[in-house]
Image (cartoon, rainbow, N blue to C red; front, side, top):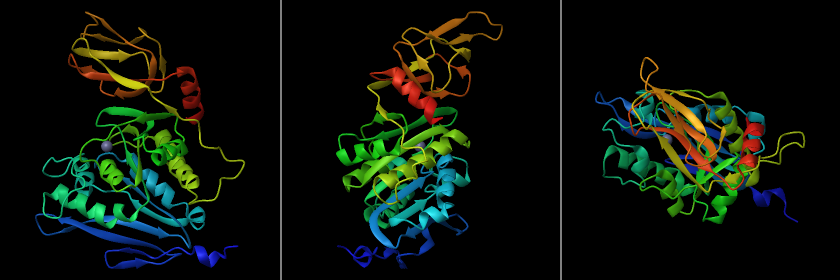
Length: 339
Ligand SMILES: [Zn+2]
């Protein structure tokens, strides 16, 4: 039989700071400085459980205007009673792109996308340096990761997980998160998720809502999903029998964007999370007098997982993102339950 001292957690070292088992500490990663030499730091909270277990990072706002994840991390951090039961180490990084966040922008000051700068290097551009710092101080010390995103500016997404499902550990994590829609997504060059995967850190990307907005149902789904993953990898004790178990997940067969067939303004007849049938009407585009109506229809059935929130389009603009599934009805039921 193991005594509990056998499974005592190790101290976590970050920079010159040691966080000991049972302690929680905030440190500032020195990321860069402004023109006037003001230092800009990435705040990192490290919660080191008394007992051993996985090391999980949860990061947000690597795209500085995607703020739902910041609120998700805040609410997880406020669950102090629950976090007292933590096994292993939890690392919370609510704002990775501090420049973008402070400018309400997705990008770094040089317009680089930080999520295309990974794994970075110590002598490259600002993005490369921040990516390198993040990999060295955080990702390289973790076993698992969750990177929180939202849809881009003026685009909203149904809560969904994107993950590389050909890795069994990552696929299990995606199932553990428990949102209905899972997209098997091959990695993009230079993303945090790709760099983490190369280091064998199983990492999920959660995506939901719209940039520069707090979407309450998305935030709740994110908090629930992160805690569910933590239970799944035994960082937290199982939920009470009265609490809702992780929802069913469905992997999309594929997805496509419906594009505007004409420039104009549009009125949508469907909402995010709706089920659509092949050839069903999704929206009507018209001129300012309501003339020249152009109906927009679905090429294929599925679930609406993303939508433009600006009702003004140029011909060819992406309007509605539809994912297809083997059994759309079951996915729709799970979405309604999850809401
Ligand atoms: Zn993003």
